[in-house]
Image (cartoon, rainbow, N blue to C red; front, side, top):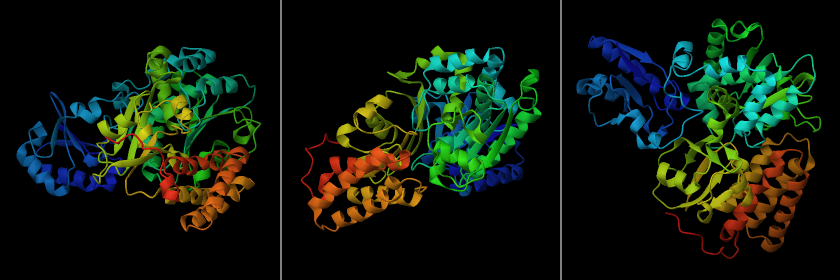
Length: 519
Protein backbone atom coordinates (compact mmCIF):
# COMPACT_ATOMS: atom_id res chain seq x y z
CA UNK A 1 0.00 0.00 0.00
CA UNK A 2 1.44 3.37 -1.07
CA UNK A 3 1.92 5.97 1.65
CA UNK A 4 0.97 9.53 0.72
CA UNK A 5 1.90 12.40 3.05
CA UNK A 6 -0.38 15.44 3.35
CA UNK A 7 0.50 17.93 6.11
CA UNK A 8 -1.72 18.58 9.11
CA UNK A 9 0.34 21.70 9.85
CA UNK A 10 -1.87 24.77 10.27
CA UNK A 11 0.06 26.67 7.61
CA UNK A 12 -0.71 23.94 5.09
CA UNK A 13 -4.29 23.67 6.34
CA UNK A 14 -4.75 27.38 5.70
CA UNK A 15 -3.81 26.70 2.07
CA UNK A 16 -6.33 23.87 1.65
CA UNK A 17 -4.44 20.75 2.78
CA UNK A 18 -7.56 19.19 4.31
CA UNK A 19 -9.46 19.40 1.03
CA UNK A 20 -6.46 17.96 -0.81
CA UNK A 21 -6.28 15.00 1.59
CA UNK A 22 -9.98 14.28 1.07
CA UNK A 23 -9.58 14.54 -2.70
CA UNK A 24 -6.67 12.07 -2.71
CA UNK A 25 -8.62 9.58 -0.57
CA UNK A 26 -11.69 9.89 -2.81
CA UNK A 27 -9.73 9.57 -6.05
CA UNK A 28 -7.84 6.53 -4.78
CA UNK A 29 -11.15 4.88 -3.85
CA UNK A 30 -12.66 5.57 -7.28
CA UNK A 31 -9.60 4.11 -9.00
CA UNK A 32 -9.40 1.20 -6.56
CA UNK A 33 -5.81 2.08 -5.65
CA UNK A 34 -4.60 1.28 -2.15
CA UNK A 35 -3.34 4.41 -0.41
CA UNK A 36 -2.44 5.15 3.22
CA UNK A 37 -2.71 8.83 4.05
CA UNK A 38 -0.17 10.05 6.61
CA UNK A 39 -0.86 13.49 8.07
CA UNK A 40 2.66 14.75 8.67
CA UNK A 41 3.93 18.21 9.59
CA UNK A 42 5.11 20.76 7.07
CA UNK A 43 8.67 20.66 5.78
CA UNK A 44 8.64 24.43 6.02
CA UNK A 45 8.60 25.19 2.29
CA UNK A 46 5.49 27.29 2.67
CA UNK A 47 5.37 28.61 -0.89
CA UNK A 48 4.78 24.98 -1.97
CA UNK A 49 1.95 24.23 0.47
CA UNK A 50 -0.01 22.08 0.35
CA UNK A 51 3.01 19.95 -0.53
CA UNK A 52 2.13 16.29 -1.05
CA UNK A 53 4.77 13.58 -0.82
CA UNK A 54 4.63 10.01 -2.10
CA UNK A 55 6.77 7.23 -0.67
CA UNK A 56 8.55 5.24 -3.39
CA UNK A 57 11.26 2.55 -3.26
CA UNK A 58 13.85 5.26 -4.03
CA UNK A 59 12.58 7.76 -1.47
CA UNK A 60 9.86 10.37 -1.12
CA UNK A 61 8.84 12.49 -4.11
CA UNK A 62 7.32 15.94 -3.61
CA UNK A 63 4.50 17.68 -5.49
CA UNK A 64 3.18 21.13 -4.77
CA UNK A 65 1.41 23.38 -4.35
CA UNK A 66 -1.46 20.95 -4.89
CA UNK A 67 -5.12 21.90 -5.08
CA UNK A 68 -8.07 19.45 -5.04
CA UNK A 69 -8.48 20.11 -8.76
CA UNK A 70 -4.94 18.88 -9.42
CA UNK A 71 -5.53 15.46 -7.85
CA UNK A 72 -7.07 13.58 -10.84
CA UNK A 73 -4.21 14.78 -13.07
CA UNK A 74 -1.65 13.61 -10.53
CA UNK A 75 -3.20 10.14 -10.52
CA UNK A 76 -3.30 10.13 -14.34
CA UNK A 77 0.42 10.98 -14.41
CA UNK A 78 1.25 8.12 -12.05
CA UNK A 79 2.28 10.20 -9.07
CA UNK A 80 1.74 7.21 -6.76
CA UNK A 81 4.83 5.78 -8.43
CA UNK A 82 6.67 9.11 -8.21
CA UNK A 83 6.36 9.88 -11.92
CA UNK A 84 6.80 13.29 -13.50
CA UNK A 85 4.15 16.00 -13.32
CA UNK A 86 4.32 19.81 -13.72
CA UNK A 87 3.84 20.12 -9.96
CA UNK A 88 6.64 17.64 -9.25
CA UNK A 89 9.87 18.67 -7.50
CA UNK A 90 11.67 15.34 -7.53
CA UNK A 91 13.07 13.73 -4.38
CA UNK A 92 12.06 15.85 -1.41
CA UNK A 93 15.45 15.74 0.27
CA UNK A 94 17.11 17.04 -2.91
CA UNK A 95 15.04 20.22 -3.16
CA UNK A 96 17.80 22.86 -2.85
CA UNK A 97 15.98 24.80 -0.12
CA UNK A 98 16.05 21.67 2.07
CA UNK A 99 19.29 20.09 0.88
CA UNK A 100 21.40 23.09 1.99
CA UNK A 101 20.08 23.13 5.55
CA UNK A 102 21.45 21.57 8.76
CA UNK A 103 18.29 20.16 10.30
CA UNK A 104 18.90 18.98 13.85
CA UNK A 105 16.02 20.27 15.94
CA UNK A 106 13.56 20.01 13.04
CA UNK A 107 15.00 16.80 11.56
CA UNK A 108 11.74 14.84 11.91
CA UNK A 109 9.33 17.71 11.14
CA UNK A 110 7.49 16.85 7.94
CA UNK A 111 9.05 13.38 7.90
CA UNK A 112 7.04 11.40 10.47
CA UNK A 113 3.50 10.96 11.69
CA UNK A 114 3.75 13.52 14.50
CA UNK A 115 1.93 11.52 17.17
CA UNK A 116 3.15 8.00 16.35
CA UNK A 117 5.53 6.60 18.99
CA UNK A 118 6.80 3.83 16.64
CA UNK A 119 7.45 6.35 13.85
CA UNK A 120 9.22 8.67 16.29
CA UNK A 121 11.44 5.88 17.58
CA UNK A 122 12.25 4.66 14.05
CA UNK A 123 13.72 8.10 13.44
CA UNK A 124 15.87 8.23 16.57
CA UNK A 125 13.27 9.32 19.09
CA UNK A 126 13.74 8.62 22.83
CA UNK A 127 17.37 7.59 22.42
CA UNK A 128 18.40 10.72 24.31
CA UNK A 129 15.93 9.93 27.08
CA UNK A 130 17.21 6.38 27.45
CA UNK A 131 20.76 7.70 27.71
CA UNK A 132 19.66 10.27 30.30
CA UNK A 133 18.02 7.58 32.45
CA UNK A 134 21.43 5.93 32.79
CA UNK A 135 23.10 9.17 33.90
CA UNK A 136 23.25 11.09 37.17
CA UNK A 137 21.32 14.39 37.14
CA UNK A 138 24.51 16.43 37.39
CA UNK A 139 25.94 14.59 34.36
CA UNK A 140 22.87 15.48 32.28
CA UNK A 141 23.22 19.12 33.28
CA UNK A 142 26.92 19.04 32.44
CA UNK A 143 26.22 17.62 28.97
CA UNK A 144 23.77 20.43 28.25
CA UNK A 145 26.26 22.98 29.61
CA UNK A 146 29.13 21.63 27.50
CA UNK A 147 26.97 21.66 24.36
CA UNK A 148 26.84 25.45 24.49
CA UNK A 149 23.05 25.48 24.14
CA UNK A 150 21.61 28.90 24.91
CA UNK A 151 17.98 29.90 25.26
CA UNK A 152 16.33 30.11 21.86
CA UNK A 153 13.48 32.30 23.05
CA UNK A 154 15.39 35.57 22.73
CA UNK A 155 17.47 36.13 25.87
CA UNK A 156 20.12 33.57 24.82
CA UNK A 157 20.92 32.69 28.44
CA UNK A 158 23.02 29.50 28.76
CA UNK A 159 20.58 26.64 29.33
CA UNK A 160 23.01 24.58 31.41
CA UNK A 161 23.51 27.38 33.95
CA UNK A 162 19.77 27.73 34.44
CA UNK A 163 19.41 23.97 34.93
CA UNK A 164 22.35 23.87 37.34
CA UNK A 165 20.72 26.53 39.50
CA UNK A 166 17.48 24.55 39.74
CA UNK A 167 19.35 21.30 40.39
CA UNK A 168 21.26 22.91 43.25
CA UNK A 169 18.18 24.41 44.90
CA UNK A 170 16.59 22.23 47.57
CA UNK A 171 12.80 21.95 47.42
CA UNK A 172 10.04 19.39 47.88
CA UNK A 173 8.74 20.12 44.37
CA UNK A 174 10.30 21.43 41.17
CA UNK A 175 8.78 22.19 37.76
CA UNK A 176 9.67 22.32 34.08
CA UNK A 177 7.76 24.97 32.16
CA UNK A 178 7.86 25.25 28.39
CA UNK A 179 7.25 28.75 27.10
CA UNK A 180 5.31 28.03 23.90
CA UNK A 181 3.71 31.48 23.81
CA UNK A 182 5.25 32.21 20.42
CA UNK A 183 4.05 35.74 19.77
CA UNK A 184 6.79 37.49 17.79
CA UNK A 185 5.92 38.70 14.31
CA UNK A 186 7.24 36.42 11.59
CA UNK A 187 7.87 33.45 13.88
CA UNK A 188 6.44 29.96 13.57
CA UNK A 189 9.21 27.46 14.40
CA UNK A 190 7.70 26.61 17.80
CA UNK A 191 4.35 25.94 16.16
CA UNK A 192 5.98 23.76 13.50
CA UNK A 193 7.71 21.65 16.17
CA UNK A 194 4.53 21.30 18.23
CA UNK A 195 2.44 20.35 15.21
CA UNK A 196 5.05 18.37 13.29
CA UNK A 197 7.16 16.66 16.00
CA UNK A 198 5.54 17.21 19.42
CA UNK A 199 7.18 14.12 20.90
CA UNK A 200 10.62 15.75 20.70
CA UNK A 201 9.33 18.46 23.03
CA UNK A 202 7.87 15.83 25.34
CA UNK A 203 11.21 14.00 25.37
CA UNK A 204 13.16 17.20 26.02
CA UNK A 205 10.97 18.10 28.96
CA UNK A 206 11.27 14.64 30.51
CA UNK A 207 15.07 14.88 30.23
CA UNK A 208 14.97 18.31 31.85
CA UNK A 209 12.91 16.86 34.69
CA UNK A 210 15.43 14.05 35.21
CA UNK A 211 18.28 16.57 35.17
CA UNK A 212 16.99 18.89 37.89
CA UNK A 213 14.72 16.63 39.93
CA UNK A 214 11.42 18.02 38.65
CA UNK A 215 8.43 15.68 38.56
CA UNK A 216 5.89 17.84 36.72
CA UNK A 217 5.86 19.95 33.61
CA UNK A 218 3.58 22.40 31.86
CA UNK A 219 3.53 23.50 28.22
CA UNK A 220 2.08 27.02 28.04
CA UNK A 221 0.70 27.42 24.51
CA UNK A 222 -0.79 30.57 23.05
CA UNK A 223 -4.54 30.40 22.36
CA UNK A 224 -4.01 31.10 18.66
CA UNK A 225 -2.44 27.64 18.21
CA UNK A 226 -5.37 25.19 18.44
CA UNK A 227 -3.75 22.66 16.08
CA UNK A 228 -0.59 22.65 18.21
CA UNK A 229 -2.68 22.05 21.33
CA UNK A 230 -4.38 19.10 19.62
CA UNK A 231 -1.08 17.57 18.48
CA UNK A 232 0.55 18.04 21.89
CA UNK A 233 -2.42 16.51 23.67
CA UNK A 234 -2.34 13.46 21.38
CA UNK A 235 1.44 13.14 21.82
CA UNK A 236 1.20 13.30 25.63
CA UNK A 237 -1.53 10.66 25.61
CA UNK A 238 0.58 8.39 23.40
CA UNK A 239 3.68 8.92 25.58
CA UNK A 240 1.70 8.17 28.74
CA UNK A 241 0.29 4.99 27.22
CA UNK A 242 3.81 3.96 26.19
CA UNK A 243 5.24 4.37 29.69
CA UNK A 244 7.29 7.47 28.91
CA UNK A 245 5.29 9.64 31.32
CA UNK A 246 3.73 9.03 34.70
CA UNK A 247 4.81 7.45 37.97
CA UNK A 248 7.76 5.52 36.51
CA UNK A 249 9.36 6.77 33.30
CA UNK A 250 10.26 3.63 31.32
CA UNK A 251 10.19 1.63 34.55
CA UNK A 252 12.93 3.75 36.16
CA UNK A 253 10.90 4.63 39.24
CA UNK A 254 11.35 8.33 38.38
CA UNK A 255 8.15 10.33 37.94
CA UNK A 256 7.31 12.95 35.35
CA UNK A 257 3.83 14.25 34.52
CA UNK A 258 3.08 16.69 31.72
CA UNK A 259 0.13 18.95 30.93
CA UNK A 260 -0.80 21.51 28.28
CA UNK A 261 -2.13 24.88 29.41
CA UNK A 262 -3.59 27.41 26.98
CA UNK A 263 -2.93 31.13 27.38
CA UNK A 264 -5.41 33.92 26.73
CA UNK A 265 -3.62 35.84 23.99
CA UNK A 266 -1.42 38.33 25.88
CA UNK A 267 1.95 39.08 24.25
CA UNK A 268 3.43 39.90 27.65
CA UNK A 269 2.97 36.27 28.71
CA UNK A 270 5.95 35.44 26.54
CA UNK A 271 7.97 37.04 29.35
CA UNK A 272 8.75 34.21 31.74
CA UNK A 273 7.46 35.72 34.98
CA UNK A 274 4.24 37.00 33.39
CA UNK A 275 3.79 33.49 32.03
CA UNK A 276 4.12 32.08 35.55
CA UNK A 277 1.50 34.52 36.82
CA UNK A 278 -0.87 33.35 34.09
CA UNK A 279 -0.14 29.68 34.84
CA UNK A 280 -1.04 30.32 38.45
CA UNK A 281 -4.40 31.75 37.40
CA UNK A 282 -3.68 35.46 37.66
CA UNK A 283 -3.44 38.29 35.17
CA UNK A 284 -0.20 38.11 33.23
CA UNK A 285 1.99 40.80 34.78
CA UNK A 286 5.76 40.89 35.07
CA UNK A 287 7.28 39.97 38.45
CA UNK A 288 10.15 41.79 40.08
CA UNK A 289 13.45 39.87 40.07
CA UNK A 290 15.03 38.62 42.26
CA UNK A 291 13.98 36.04 43.18
CA UNK A 292 14.72 34.32 39.91
CA UNK A 293 12.24 31.66 38.69
CA UNK A 294 15.05 29.10 39.03
CA UNK A 295 14.85 29.73 42.79
CA UNK A 296 11.20 30.70 43.27
CA UNK A 297 9.17 30.11 40.15
CA UNK A 298 5.87 28.35 39.58
CA UNK A 299 3.89 28.23 42.87
CA UNK A 300 7.03 29.51 44.59
CA UNK A 301 9.07 26.41 43.65
CA UNK A 302 12.33 26.12 41.65
CA UNK A 303 11.39 26.14 37.98
CA UNK A 304 13.19 25.62 34.69
CA UNK A 305 11.61 27.83 32.01
CA UNK A 306 12.79 27.24 28.46
CA UNK A 307 11.17 27.79 25.11
CA UNK A 308 10.18 25.09 22.61
CA UNK A 309 13.32 25.14 20.46
CA UNK A 310 15.61 25.02 23.52
CA UNK A 311 13.87 21.97 24.97
CA UNK A 312 13.54 20.29 21.56
CA UNK A 313 17.33 20.58 21.14
CA UNK A 314 18.06 18.66 24.33
CA UNK A 315 17.33 15.12 23.00
CA UNK A 316 19.95 15.61 20.28
CA UNK A 317 22.58 16.51 22.87
CA UNK A 318 21.77 13.50 25.05
CA UNK A 319 21.64 11.21 22.02
CA UNK A 320 24.75 12.28 20.11
CA UNK A 321 26.76 14.04 22.77
CA UNK A 322 27.62 17.61 23.70
CA UNK A 323 30.54 17.80 21.27
CA UNK A 324 28.36 16.82 18.30
CA UNK A 325 26.01 19.72 18.95
CA UNK A 326 28.79 22.17 19.87
CA UNK A 327 30.58 21.51 16.58
CA UNK A 328 27.87 23.47 14.79
CA UNK A 329 27.93 27.26 14.98
CA UNK A 330 30.46 29.97 15.71
CA UNK A 331 31.89 31.83 18.71
CA UNK A 332 29.59 31.50 21.72
CA UNK A 333 26.63 30.73 19.45
CA UNK A 334 26.65 26.95 19.22
CA UNK A 335 24.37 24.54 17.45
CA UNK A 336 21.71 25.46 14.93
CA UNK A 337 18.76 27.82 14.84
CA UNK A 338 15.48 27.31 12.97
CA UNK A 339 15.18 30.65 11.13
CA UNK A 340 11.83 31.83 9.84
CA UNK A 341 11.54 33.90 6.65
CA UNK A 342 8.36 35.94 6.42
CA UNK A 343 6.98 39.23 5.11
CA UNK A 344 7.65 40.37 1.56
CA UNK A 345 9.82 37.39 0.61
CA UNK A 346 9.56 35.11 -2.42
CA UNK A 347 10.24 31.82 -0.65
CA UNK A 348 8.94 32.15 2.88
CA UNK A 349 9.45 29.26 5.26
CA UNK A 350 11.69 27.59 7.80
CA UNK A 351 15.45 27.37 7.33
CA UNK A 352 17.50 25.58 10.01
CA UNK A 353 21.16 26.52 9.77
CA UNK A 354 24.19 26.53 12.03
CA UNK A 355 24.99 29.91 13.55
CA UNK A 356 27.27 31.86 11.23
CA UNK A 357 25.08 32.02 8.14
CA UNK A 358 24.75 35.64 7.02
CA UNK A 359 21.54 37.60 6.74
CA UNK A 360 22.25 38.09 3.03
CA UNK A 361 22.53 34.35 2.42
CA UNK A 362 19.19 33.79 4.14
CA UNK A 363 17.45 36.57 2.22
CA UNK A 364 18.70 35.68 -1.24
CA UNK A 365 20.02 32.10 -1.32
CA UNK A 366 16.96 30.82 0.56
CA UNK A 367 14.36 33.58 0.45
CA UNK A 368 14.94 34.46 -3.20
CA UNK A 369 14.55 38.20 -2.60
CA UNK A 370 11.19 39.92 -2.32
CA UNK A 371 7.89 38.53 -3.50
CA UNK A 372 7.17 41.90 -5.10
CA UNK A 373 10.40 41.77 -7.09
CA UNK A 374 11.51 45.11 -5.69
CA UNK A 375 14.79 45.64 -3.78
CA UNK A 376 14.92 44.71 -0.10
CA UNK A 377 15.21 47.91 1.90
CA UNK A 378 15.03 46.60 5.46
CA UNK A 379 14.55 43.46 7.51
CA UNK A 380 13.39 43.19 11.09
CA UNK A 381 14.96 40.33 13.01
CA UNK A 382 13.86 39.19 16.45
CA UNK A 383 10.16 40.06 16.42
CA UNK A 384 8.41 43.38 17.04
CA UNK A 385 11.15 44.44 19.48
CA UNK A 386 13.94 43.67 17.00
CA UNK A 387 16.03 46.26 15.20
CA UNK A 388 15.56 47.10 11.53
CA UNK A 389 18.66 46.21 9.53
CA UNK A 390 19.56 48.10 6.34
CA UNK A 391 21.24 46.49 3.33
CA UNK A 392 24.65 47.62 4.62
CA UNK A 393 24.31 45.16 7.52
CA UNK A 394 23.10 42.14 5.54
CA UNK A 395 26.55 40.53 5.68
CA UNK A 396 26.34 40.24 9.47
CA UNK A 397 26.55 36.58 10.52
CA UNK A 398 23.69 35.17 12.55
CA UNK A 399 25.48 35.17 15.90
CA UNK A 400 24.31 36.53 19.24
CA UNK A 401 27.43 38.61 19.87
CA UNK A 402 27.71 39.87 16.27
CA UNK A 403 24.13 41.14 16.49
CA UNK A 404 24.78 42.83 19.83
CA UNK A 405 27.66 44.58 18.09
CA UNK A 406 25.24 46.27 15.67
CA UNK A 407 22.62 47.02 18.38
CA UNK A 408 20.35 44.23 17.18
CA UNK A 409 19.22 40.85 18.46
CA UNK A 410 18.74 37.38 17.00
CA UNK A 411 15.73 36.75 19.24
CA UNK A 412 13.58 33.83 18.19
CA UNK A 413 15.05 33.82 14.68
CA UNK A 414 12.17 35.44 12.85
CA UNK A 415 13.08 37.59 9.83
CA UNK A 416 10.45 39.91 8.34
CA UNK A 417 11.33 41.39 4.94
CA UNK A 418 10.35 44.83 3.60
CA UNK A 419 10.91 46.15 0.08
CA UNK A 420 11.78 49.73 -0.90
CA UNK A 421 8.19 50.97 -0.57
CA UNK A 422 8.23 50.71 3.24
CA UNK A 423 7.91 53.89 5.31
CA UNK A 424 10.26 53.43 8.26
CA UNK A 425 8.84 56.33 10.26
CA UNK A 426 5.51 54.52 10.31
CA UNK A 427 7.29 51.28 11.26
CA UNK A 428 8.86 53.08 14.22
CA UNK A 429 5.47 54.42 15.25
CA UNK A 430 4.02 50.90 14.99
CA UNK A 431 6.66 49.60 17.42
CA UNK A 432 5.66 52.17 20.03
CA UNK A 433 1.96 51.50 19.45
CA UNK A 434 2.51 47.76 19.81
CA UNK A 435 4.21 48.33 23.16
CA UNK A 436 1.37 50.60 24.31
CA UNK A 437 -1.22 47.96 23.44
CA UNK A 438 0.64 44.98 24.88
CA UNK A 439 2.14 46.54 28.02
CA UNK A 440 1.09 44.85 31.25
CA UNK A 441 1.08 48.31 32.83
CA UNK A 442 3.25 47.51 35.81
CA UNK A 443 6.09 49.95 35.16
CA UNK A 444 5.86 53.61 34.16
CA UNK A 445 8.53 53.73 31.40
CA UNK A 446 6.68 51.06 29.41
CA UNK A 447 3.09 51.98 30.28
CA UNK A 448 3.41 55.73 29.78
CA UNK A 449 6.56 55.94 27.67
CA UNK A 450 5.05 53.95 24.81
CA UNK A 451 1.95 56.17 24.69
CA UNK A 452 4.09 59.33 24.68
CA UNK A 453 6.26 57.69 22.02
CA UNK A 454 3.31 57.29 19.67
CA UNK A 455 2.36 60.94 20.22
CA UNK A 456 5.87 62.23 19.58
CA UNK A 457 6.30 60.12 16.44
CA UNK A 458 2.95 61.35 15.16
CA UNK A 459 4.23 64.92 15.52
CA UNK A 460 7.44 64.03 13.70
CA UNK A 461 5.52 62.42 10.85
CA UNK A 462 3.27 65.51 10.66
CA UNK A 463 6.41 67.73 10.55
CA UNK A 464 5.54 69.53 13.78
CA UNK A 465 8.62 71.03 15.47
CA UNK A 466 10.60 68.13 14.05
CA UNK A 467 14.02 68.86 15.54
CA UNK A 468 12.73 69.16 19.11
CA UNK A 469 10.55 66.07 18.79
CA UNK A 470 13.40 64.00 17.35
CA UNK A 471 15.49 64.89 20.40
CA UNK A 472 12.54 64.08 22.63
CA UNK A 473 11.96 60.62 21.12
CA UNK A 474 15.64 59.75 21.64
CA UNK A 475 15.45 60.86 25.28
CA UNK A 476 12.29 58.82 25.71
CA UNK A 477 14.03 55.75 24.24
CA UNK A 478 16.90 56.17 26.71
CA UNK A 479 14.41 56.23 29.60
CA UNK A 480 12.61 53.11 28.35
CA UNK A 481 15.88 51.26 27.77
CA UNK A 482 17.21 52.01 31.24
CA UNK A 483 14.05 52.02 33.33
CA UNK A 484 11.64 49.36 32.07
CA UNK A 485 10.96 46.33 34.22
CA UNK A 486 11.16 43.80 31.37
CA UNK A 487 12.19 43.48 27.74
CA UNK A 488 8.90 44.74 26.30
CA UNK A 489 9.53 48.34 27.32
CA UNK A 490 13.28 47.87 27.46
CA UNK A 491 13.60 46.75 23.85
CA UNK A 492 10.87 48.74 22.11
CA UNK A 493 13.52 51.45 21.47
CA UNK A 494 15.50 48.99 19.31
CA UNK A 495 13.22 49.22 16.25
CA UNK A 496 12.61 52.94 16.84
CA UNK A 497 16.28 53.91 17.12
CA UNK A 498 17.37 51.62 14.28
CA UNK A 499 14.78 53.20 11.99
CA UNK A 500 15.99 56.68 13.00
CA UNK A 501 19.67 55.81 12.60
CA UNK A 502 19.53 53.84 9.35
CA UNK A 503 16.63 55.50 7.55
CA UNK A 504 16.74 59.17 8.66
CA UNK A 505 15.27 60.39 5.36
CA UNK A 506 11.91 58.88 6.36
CA UNK A 507 11.92 61.24 9.36
CA UNK A 508 12.68 64.33 7.27
CA UNK A 509 16.42 64.23 7.95
CA UNK A 510 19.34 64.02 5.52
CA UNK A 511 19.87 60.50 4.18
CA UNK A 512 22.41 58.25 5.83
CA UNK A 513 25.67 57.58 3.95
CA UNK A 514 25.04 55.40 0.93
CA UNK A 515 24.41 51.84 2.14
CA UNK A 516 25.88 48.82 0.41
CA UNK A 517 23.69 47.98 -2.54
CA UNK A 518 21.23 45.16 -2.06
CA UNK A 519 21.78 42.21 -4.34
